Image 1 (cartoon, helix red, strand yellow):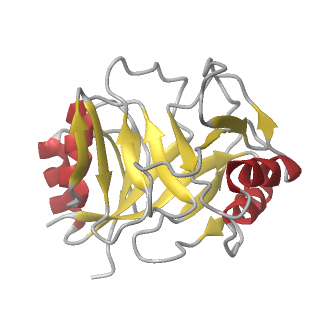
Image 2: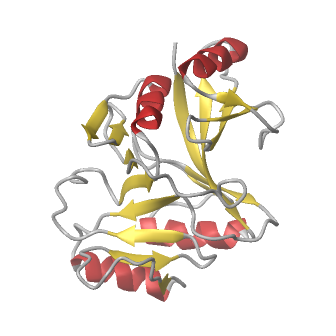
Length: 233
């Protein structure tokens, strides 16, 4: 038994506005506060209203690919025209990627054309964040996705259907500033409580209150929040 990934949830002061920004950047249909997955293996994104102020940098961000006409400069200019701004997170003048902030200050990166690690992933190349190897292994087993990178404490998983990778950069792990603004929502493929126990056995911790009334709130081995929802069966 496994769980499957339903969506990436992102907290937003104005969910509709932020959904419109990301929909235009990713060239996806916007359905209220949701950007549905464009194809199997793709990442659906839901924007959830939150009044919590931003505190520091997020642990996780989206990496966008730029293998499109006009390349990296085109994607950067598109995002800037829609309300993004340049952001300095200490990346240095020799960085090949461009760091931006979305209209609510959320970090995102536009990687260079021809990036081999993200080849074939689509406009969203990766959900990148801090995390030790134990966390990458946890997510691989939780989702039933293979580890497509496992070296020097750095890990990455990817759906067998392709699509974005989820990556963890190893230790040290950045401190949290309250609850993570970016969180993963999973759906149980079997009885909810049985899947909760399986995830706990893999290293999750049951905690707090879920975003959805029928969900169960958990954290992974690096204290990143996630939500498990019941399946249809």
